[in-house]
Length: 64
Length: 134
Image (cartoon, rainbow over all chains, first blue to last red; front, side, top):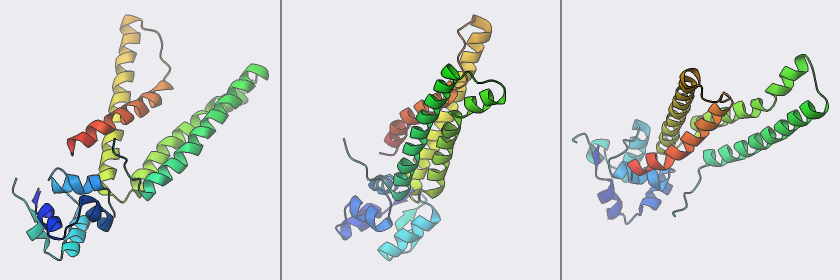
C-alpha cells in the first residue's frame, strides 16, 4: 500500500527512529510501512493519523 | 552490523528463555546422573526421562508468550513467519528422514531432534524474512 509517510516525516524533520519512538515500534517497522512492504493494522494506521493530524486516506492510498 | 533495540516483550522473552534453557541443562544432567548411578526402574524411569523435555516444551510456550505480548505488529509478524518456517523445516526434515529410514535404511534419528530442527530453521529464516521488508 502506497503512503505519504516519508513526506509527512520530512515535513517535521523526523527521522525514522523519531517516528518509531513516537509510535512505540521498531525503526524497521517504520521503514517496512514507509516502503509499502508492510501494511499497518487499523489501530496503527489511526495512531499515525493522529500523530500527523491527517485523515488516514490522505496518508495511505490503496493503489498498487 | 546494526544493533536492533529490544522491545519490552523481547526482553521478557530473553528473561524467560534463559532460565528455561538453564533448567533444561540442569534436568538433563540430573536425569543422566541418576540413570548412570542409581539405575532407576518402573515409573521413575518414565518420570526421569520426561524431566529434561519439560523445559524444552516450556521454550515453545515462551515463544507463544512473546507472540502474544509483542505490541509491535511488524516484529510480531516476523516471529510468526519464522515460527512457520521452523515448523515447516522441522516437519520436512523429519518426514524426509523418516522416509530415508524406511526405504534406504538410514540410521535412526531420535524424534527428540525435531525440536532442535525447529529452532534451527526458525533462527536461520529470520534474517531472510527481515530482508524481504528492507
